[in-house]
Image (cartoon, rainbow, N blue to C red):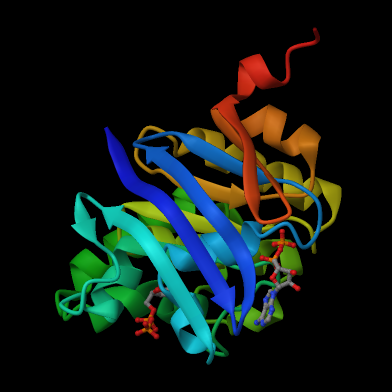
Length: 236
Ligand code: ADP
Ligand code: ADP
């Protein structure tokens, strides 16, 4: 089953057409890598999936984008609810400037969950899934910004996992990190794959081949090739 399906997605920044009719589906429990040169439209496309482009003025988007069969761009769409189902992790770790615990609990509290025990359990599970629990468990009340960049990024991943999104969008989540931290993130993505679905933009072909099930190659705002990562990266 596909979590998200897109058909003939076109996006214009003013009158510049940045996406020229993209068709791409995101199968449940798979990691889809979006690769291609800088400026090819990967990030623009990713941002269509949780309506982040809505924030930019002069943007026009046409085509069909569906989450669980429902139109993402319907006037009925609750964008805040959409962004809980479609979580996002950015290139630069962006924890809120308060405690690790409150970062990870943030989305749960926003969702109206009041049961402190439940919040505690969810925070712990999410930090474990994000492979950062051991490093933060004795300092959960410390400001998230006091941790290293790699730890901050894994705290941000835990923050997204905590709200149980249907799909997690990641825009070059490891390119601001050292190789060891990047490796930890690759590993945790493989570990959570039975529970989550991921779309990851990466400029790193090796990373795409190591972690993704499906690869989509972007070039000049077009999707030039989509397929199983194993087949696409197999030597001819
Ligand atoms: P990638 O993620 O593959 O590097 P982008 O999606 O960032 O590519 O960019 C695709 C194209 O859209 C580029 O030509 C870029 O200059 C243009 N673009 C991206 N963001 C904006 C914006 N906010 N306003 C105008 N043009 C933009
Ligand atoms: P919003 O500003 O739409 O209300 P929230 O502040 O409710 O978004 O964030 C709720 C959860 O979603 C947090 O765990 C946060 O990490 C994550 N999040 C923050 N910004 C975004 C975004 N642009 N897209 C998706 N998820 C986001």
